[in-house]
Length: 90
Image (cartoon, rainbow, N blue to C red; front, side, top):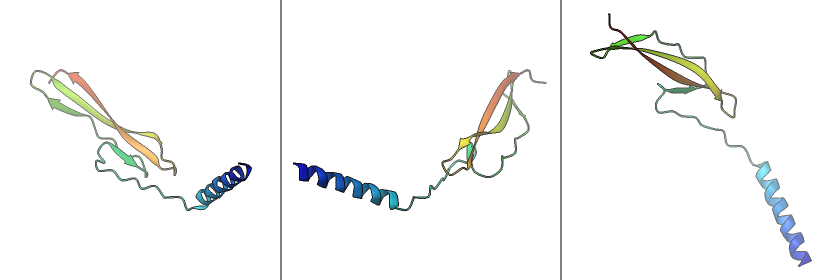
């Protein structure tokens, strides 16, 4: 029993050392829809507010980009906020 415990501890130690010595996998961030979120680079430019005629009322749509955290390798995550306000048509 004692030899089995020593063998088990040695195996666990060897596996741990092997895992720590392996090369780290570089993360690959790909997005299919960059209209809502982007990774890295500078802040995308904000669009001017847009007014959409919905028939009996109009809708003012504002889209703004904000920094929403960082990836594990330090790249900024940019996400888009969309603000909608009902306004009278002119």
